[in-house]
Structure formats: structure tokens, C-alpha cells
Amino acid sequence: MGVIGAGNVGRALVGLLSDPTRAHALEDAATAPLELVGVGVRDATLPRPGVADNLLTSDVAGLIEKDLDVLVEVAGGVVPTRPYLESALRRGISVVTANKALMAECGTELALIAHEHGADLFYEGAVGGAIPILRALRTSLAGERITRVMGIVNGTTNFILTQMTTGGSDYRDALAQAQALGYAEADPSADVEGYDAAAKVQILSTLAFGTRLSGDEIDREGVTSIRSIDVAFAQRSGYVIKLLGVAERVGETGVSRRVHPAMVPLGHPLAAVNGATNAVFVEGVKSGPLMWLGQGAGGEATATAVLGDVLDAARNRVSGRHDAPFSGDRSLHYVPSERLSSVYYLSVDVIDQPGVLAEVAGVFGRHRVSIQSMEQSDQGVDARLSFLTHHALRADVLATLEELTSLASVESVGACIAVIDRLSA
Ligand SMILES: NC(=O)c1ccc[n+]([C@@H]2O[C@H](COP(=O)([O-])OP(=O)(O)OC[C@H]3O[C@@H](n4cnc5c(N)ncnc54)[C@H](OP(=O)(O)O)[C@@H]3O)[C@@H](O)[C@H]2O)c1
Image (cartoon, rainbow, N blue to C red; front, side, top):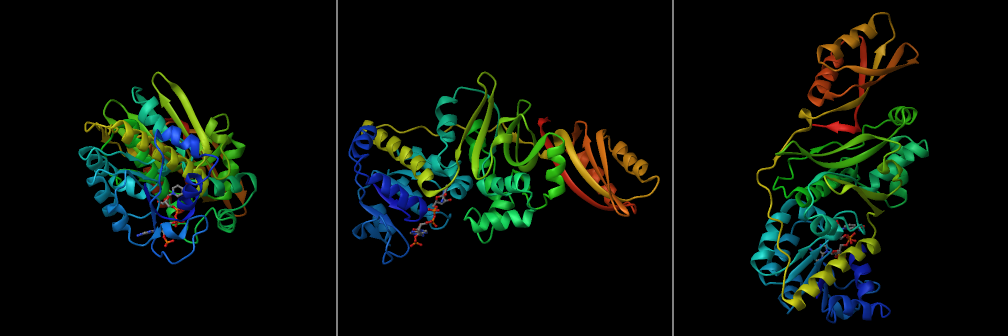
């Protein structure tokens, strides 16, 4: 086997492969000895602790041309990774990757190339680090009709929201703490804007529903606009705010795919998932609710998932079989969030004067959004109105907010956060 990448995951994987206390167990599980013949990096002259110098090479194309059975890709990025993996698969080499960006963008195409050339393509490490959710969807739940997959699949944003909830931090402080602890990058946009979670939703929904939808057909909203007052309102009302990645059946032929902050009821299993931990909650018609929870990132945790895939691929090699790609249900279409209904939390800052509340309530009524409860707090000359709506169509809620923005008595329109327990088509 060969590996591309000797960073956090690559070095941890090499460490597991070369651990003498695991050697027998690995050989038993693989049904053959595993031999690492090379580790591709950009700069092979740099020392890589734990990786023997004679294994390092910057000639990745040359590594793929060796007589490999399995190629592991833990380098990241789409270019030049995609051509490397295509070339390996076309040579009949099974590929194991933890690259969510690549799998979200072209996983279906790579799976077909693998199938055509009698190779496997496994990518357990791409979603939820050590959590074996993809294998569960691919095998144990293959015959189940899954209705919803809902996950906390980005540890950085879950850490930030946890700090805002339990540590009383505001968003900026919580982000700074995440960066200081190495949970967030210097440029955190992939995490805080929801792009990373969207890539995982693309992968999860492809496996859960067999969809062939494009990565653009995911509604995405991050956590950058969440304020301390929203977190406090959620706590007072029996909820906690989480960034969720959701893939959900809508009727017989629709699928909603979205990433957004949500108010999760305190009794829901996802509400207790704190810090950088990840969790995926799956609901099936016969299985009922199921949840997986664990370390969603980190070199060693992710390397365990990668190693499991390597062993699967090795076993398949020895037995001369390969896993068939999901067939895909082309009849399923994407349903935009505007067409879904939910209970919503909304907050509006208004000028504190007589008649304003009636004016605001009139806007809700005109757009068929009925109010379940309202809380008013004084802010000097202004007042903050926090609403929980009854079930309302998101399109109507957005139209309400748009009209409210145009009122002279409205200073600003704040949060618009779905309450997940009642989200439905
Ligand atoms: N870290 C995690 O917690 C985690 C969790 C889940 C999934 N993943 C995924 O796992 C993959 C690797 O993550 P990581 O954190 O280990 O990354 P990393 O620490 O940045 O390491 C990347 C490695 O890949 C090598 N590399 C990058 N581009 C290359 C190229 N074009 N040719 C040859 N080598 C190349 C780098 O070589 P140089 O050192 O010479 O630059 C480096 O050794 C990514 O797809 C990531 O999304 C990571």
C-alpha cells in the first residue's frame, strides 16, 4: 500500500501501521500482511516524525505506478488529488480517503470509476472522524428507509456554540478561544460559514438516500450571526443552539439538505453533545432513532477510521471482490428550505412606543405566521421582541422579516432560527 500525505492523519496512520503490538491483529483483519511501500508528500526533504525517511517521496505519480493494492489519500484538496485518485482507480488500485471536500465534489464519479475497474473507494474518515457512520449507512442500514439524518458534524462550531452557552462568551471571544486551542483555523470561514458541514451533508445524504444531487443543492447558513442574546433566549426557553447538518426526506420524492443553526430541545440527544464532539442522529422507519457520537476530528481518531477502510479494502483484495457503488435514486429531487415549515425563533429590536407591537403583530398576520409566545425586554429607548412562532412556512417567515425591516418603528431584525423538533414538510 501507499499513502499520500504525512500530516496529522497521515503520520497517525503510519504510526498505527507500524505499531508492533497491533501487527498480528492487523494481519488477521486484513487476511494478509500490510506492507507500506511509500508516503507521498510535497517536500520529501523535511523530517516527518514517525515516518521512515526511506518511505518519503515527492513523486506521487511514481508511487501510484508501483504495484499497489491500496492507496490512502490523506493530503486534502481537490487538485491534484482528484487526478491522482482517478489514475490509481483506473489502474485497479483501491482507494481510501478522508477528503470530504473531494468526496462531496466528485464522490459519485470516483465511485463509478472504482466500480468499472474492480476497485474499492472507501472514505469513512471524511465524516465524523472516528465515528463509523458511513459504514453503518452503507451496510447495517442499507435496507432501511431512512427518513432523516441530522448531525453535529463540525467540531469547531460546536465548540464555539458550547462556549457561548456554558461559558457565557460572545461569538468573537468563543472563536478566539477555538483558535487558541487549535480547534479553528486562522481563517475559520470553512467552519463558521457552514461549508465544511455542507460537504458532510452531501456525503451523508448520498449514502442515506442514494441521491445524485449536486453540492449546490444544499441550503447553508453558518453561526456568525448568532448572538449571546439568542443563546440566552434559547436557554430560558428550554433549548440549546446547535449548528446542524440535515438531510431529510420530504414526501415521497423530495429531499431537503441544509446546514443551519437550530434550537434543539434540551431533552433531545443532540442537545447534550458539547465541545468539539460530533454526533449523527439517524431516524429510520423501522429502526427508529439511532445516534453515533465521538471524536469528529484529530489525526489519531481519523486515522482509526482510515485504517478500518484499509483493512476492508485489503480483505476485498484477498477475496477478489469489491463493494458495489450505491445505485442512486435519480427520482429524488431537492426541496429548498423555503418550502418547509417549522416553529421559528425570531427577534426584532423596535422603538419602544405605543402601537408598535400591534404594527409588528400585523406584519406576522399578513404573512400567515402565527405567534406562539412573545417576550419583551427593555433596551433603553428601544425594546427587544423575541418571538416563538407556531409552525410556519419558511418563505412566509422570511417575507415577514423583510417587511419588518422596512418599518420605521423597527430598528433591526435579528435571529431567525428553526426549532428542530417540529421541522417537517
Ligand atoms: N486533521 C483532521 O482532524 C481531519 C479529520 C477528518 C478528515 N481530515 C481530512 O484528512 C486529510 C488530511 O488532513 P490533515 O489534517 O492530515 O492535513 P495536513 O496536516 O495538512 O497534512 C497534509 C499532508 O498532505 C501532503 N500533501 C498535500 N498536498 C499534497 C500534494 N499535492 N502532493 C503530495 N503531498 C501533499 C502534505 O505534504 P507537505 O507536508 O510536504 O506539505 C502533508 O504531509 C484532509 O482531506 C482532511 O480534510 C482531517
